[in-house]
Length: 274
Image (cartoon, rainbow, N blue to C red; front, side):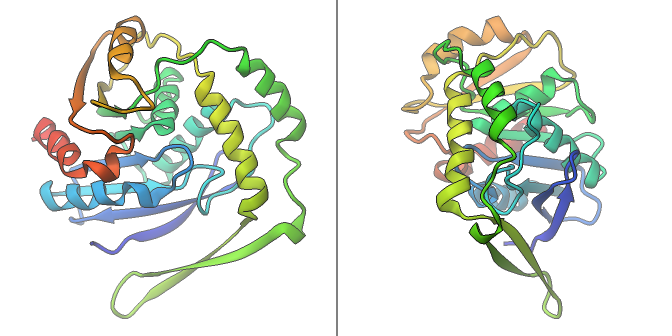
């Protein structure tokens, strides 16, 4: 595995976002940004990243911990929907790495963030977008306005300092140099479960809007026997949401294609781009 470049990117609201960048060439032709799913972290994307770096020349892969996950901040703006915050965070990542034509790969809740990014027409616009296990089918429950009100009153009330702890990550960047990054974040047993509950409710009540147009080529990937996302129902809903897209059904019984079928995923992406 290629050693990562580790950075802390400052979000649009001045919060730290933990990122890692992997590259197999000093002047990459393809620049990917991976967006992991609910309850995971950037480590979930590493099997797919490693495979892409092996099969695709001149490739850079950037992955990061979503807000409320891993070593990124647990704070959320009180007046912004979580998926909109995620879209703005994604834009901050792109600007920090000076990306002009990124290729986005979002999984599960990460695909919701990616879809919101495209809806908001944020820049830079990607050349290709892969939305894996996109949860287009969900119960139409009145979660969104309730959650907005809930977040407005409580999202800033995270645990006091005595509930926080320091974690240090050591990444060996070369044989002679390493960097230590210390992340201060709230204890998992309290605030992370609180944040994850919000994410889970949003996924359950997600009602995607119609994407009228996008400069990005959209590829929707589903696991054939994904127990969380029903591919057959999702395929019926997609024509109502997007116009120019392709679908791919992976022979997978798992929801997390990053780790379960990373070779198939990498080969599919590589074949499309080369």
